[in-house]
Image 1 (cartoon, rainbow, N blue to C red):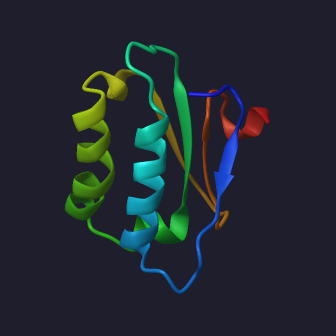
Image 2: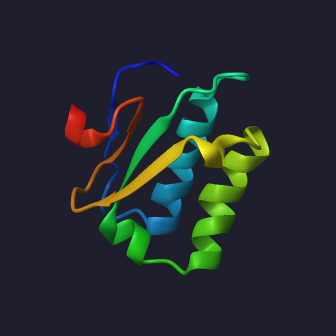
Image 3: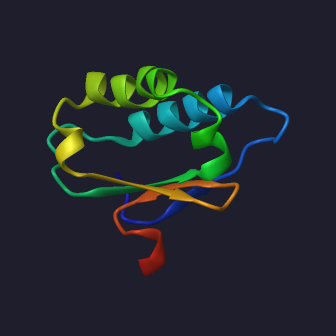
Amino acid sequence: MESQWKSLAFEQGSSPEAQLLAFTLLLRASLRPGNMQPIAVDLPRAVYQAMSPDTFRAIFSDLLLERDPAIESRLQIRVVDDLAFGYGRRASEDR
């Protein structure tokens, strides 16, 4: 994963599940095997709150764990009041 912070906003007409799936697939594609550096992720509150924990787990957690079983130990997730998703090596308040 590149060290830069990436920010992604999707069309607001898209369902929260579709937005989370698109973001998760982009994040998953950026993961590099053997990389053990922390990954910070910002999730829009509106998307996060719009789905059940089971749906969130099936879309986000399960897909990331499938790619990198050790990701939970280095993943920092923040729910933010922004409309954009974000990810990188630094927490968003450090940007």
